[in-house]
Length: 271
Image: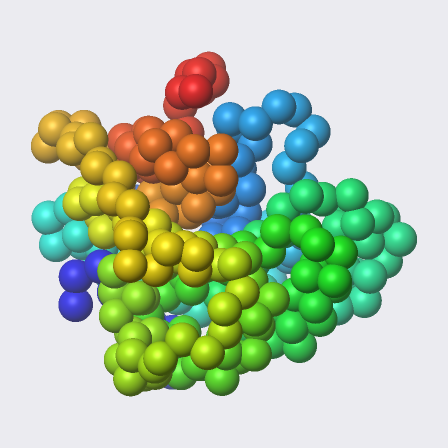
């Protein structure tokens, strides 16, 4: 299915070696949260963005034979579908987040961003972090990340949602969430904002204060020759939309013009 994402099972294991064996592979650092963090760091002032996770550790271990988190893509025109295996990402140690070095960064942060993938294998980390951030009156942002997450892990989303100030999804993730929840009547009136992207179509923002007055932000379409790779455009948007939704659109457009989750260098000022 175009623009879908699934979690790999045993049937998909041969795909990864096949791609490396039969195709010219471009290796780009990734992981949805790291993509978003690098997008934010690209635009925001130096030393204002911190990423916590397994990405750097995975790269070091991979040189010793340890397999990484992998995400092969299938493209139909400019539409991509993803088959992801989390692998070492599942090894995130909760104690690492509460270590003095990392905990102090969480305490000093104004905004904390969580990817939905974490809910699939370490939901207790997300829930505990959500409670901590909410109790400190900080902004907690959750990205649903992939349609299969609300389909298979809806209970975890429902558990963390009360602590979220902002929830981000694309149209497929929003539809999956709405379907699994049967469009429930609102019972939680927390001052929340929901952001729904829709590829090259307009982005919609809905707030709890004005649920019947959605705000629609048009996307500046790209020319065919400007589109290289749509993978991670959503991560780029999520990383910087907090500054401004239109800035998020610009960074996502830049990402689409690169291979994988990358940005132009030397750095381009998009503010």
